[in-house]
Image (cartoon, rainbow, N blue to C red; front, side):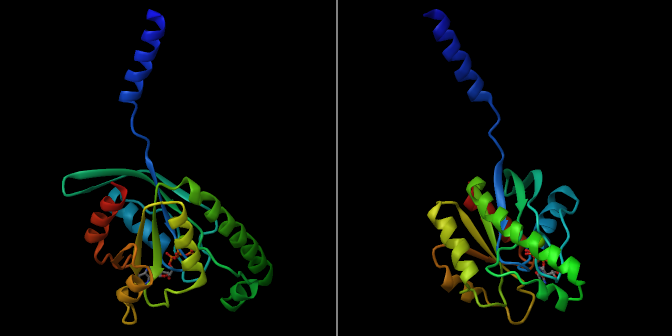
Amino acid sequence: MIKLLQKFLNKFVRNLFKKKKHIKLGLYGPPNGGKTTLANRICQDWLGEDMGTASSIAHETREIQIKEQVNIKSKGKELSFNLVDTPGIATKIDYEEFIKQGIKEKEAKKRAKEATKGVIDSIKWLDDMDAVIVVLDATLDPYSQVNITIIGNLAARDIPVLIAANKVDLKKASIKKIESAFPQYEVVGISAKYGKNLDEFYEMLFKISG
Ligand SMILES: Nc1nc2c(ncn2[C@@H]2O[C@H](COP(=O)(O)OP(=O)(O)OP(=O)(O)O)[C@@H](O)[C@H]2O)c(=O)[nH]1
Ligand SMILES: [Mg+2]
């Protein structure tokens, strides 16, 4: 009996001091929204290094990328997470689009195949996320099938979401349009490329992850 009690107490004490696991923070969205640019911005701000390659050609990220132990601080609070950059989600991937961007046929076909697998991986990984930043290009119509599907999936799983309305440095950008498309979520306007409004972004990140 005493042994059992001891065992129980040991386990209790061990659990008490076990370090809280790092939360997984995912970057999700359609291709070219600026997920990797934002991932690089976050990693530069807090680790002084890049995370991946950003490109004007869609589906640059075709594999899940993880940066472990990113620690951010805002207003005396600290947040620690593993940052997950995901391949952009699309309903249709056509290798001819890559050819139009100057990529040779063989490579274009390979890319299309990898990009398709990437989309499947992104969706598979959704279940593992503790919180998600949906990165949208604020110059585009937010009511796309992809955006609605991503946000609907996150809502169904009760995963906390922050929408980053990216590219606010561009004239055509509209944060309002995104806010009215997804009124149930916090929206923060940023420019990942030029580092605009990142302070507010980090504050919001605390709000959704806390
Ligand atoms: N003007 C402007 N361009 C941006 C901004 N953020 C990203 N971009 C550009 O948008 C393009 C796509 O950026 P990425 O970061 O590669 O986009 P992504 O969401 O990771 O794309 P995939 O990996 O294909 O899913 C690149 O040409 C970036 O330089 C921004 O804040 N303002
Ligand atoms: Mg990317």
